[in-house]
Amino acid sequence: MIKIDTAKCNKDYMCINQCPYGFMYEKDDEGFPVIKSSLFEKYCIKCWHCIAICPKGAISHPGVKQENFEQIKSNDLPSHYQTEKFIRSRRSFRSFKKKSVPDDVISKWLDFTRWSPTASNSQQISWIIVKKAAKVAHFADIMVDWLKEKRSYPEIIEHCEQGHDILLRSAPHLLIAVLPKDYFWAMTDAATAISYLELTANSLGLAICWAGYFTKAASESPALINALNLTKNEKIAAALMFGYPVYRFNRIPERKELSVRYL
Ligand SMILES: Cc1cc2nc3c(=O)[nH]c(=O)nc-3n(C[C@H](O)[C@H](O)[C@H](O)COP(=O)(O)O)c2cc1C
Image 1 (cartoon, rainbow, N blue to C red):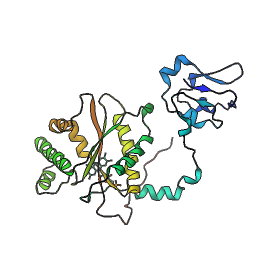
Image 2: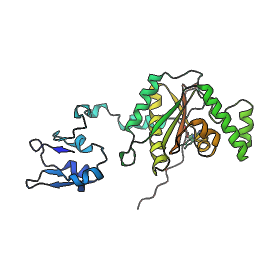
Image 3: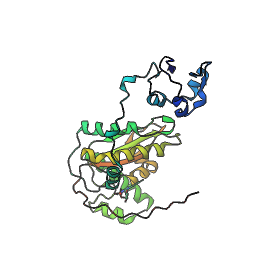
Image 4: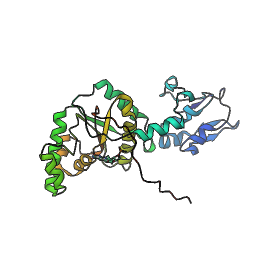
């Protein structure tokens, strides 16, 4: 249960205003915020924004180590110019070196996803990392069989059978987001986390590309579903090929104009 230290609280009510369910709070006779215990269990999503936003450090929870809440320093944050260059320079890569990415680099990279938003802060994504290039190639073969059964994309099948892996780009690794089958926001949470990985890959020298065909195959191909060894309550929500890039981009490609309407 959240505790509010009245010796520190300055009654600015930032905690109430930032709380996704501010109605969990009431004010005592002196105007200090108090959590209604009857609603806490039902509504608190453990985002800990109340603790993070309080300028006085007046809020605590026995399960939360406040000393782990890193101070935000505005000088550490990129400027608009840097953000623009950074965002526009992100690219999908389709040629990977035949070189494995060390486990510690993968862990460091995946750690970024812990800060991606999830619906109701539910943080339900778990990851499968396919580390062996031979296994990625095996999945690509299963995907070719899947396309053959569907009688779809004959040109892709032909190209793959000529030794050009258009589906998984002969990537050394595959990263797969696994989520509960019945979770409404599975695809959204996975895509958001994957975006974090796309944006941060370059900072570790990595190259990525969405594996869209793989995600589709993983929802349709019994052979692939079987090979992934999922439980009956799990589904694949998104996947990325990754490794080290063979090439670097020199230019940022043109994009469509924004389509926006203001109401
Ligand atoms: C949901 C999704 C699925 C995708 N699937 C594939 C894929 O299977 N193979 C591929 O080569 N690129 C795939 N892409 C990459 C897009 O083609 C790419 O993002 C787009 O061409 C823009 O290029 P950029 O990412 O370099 O800006 C996918 C992208 C998204 C968002």
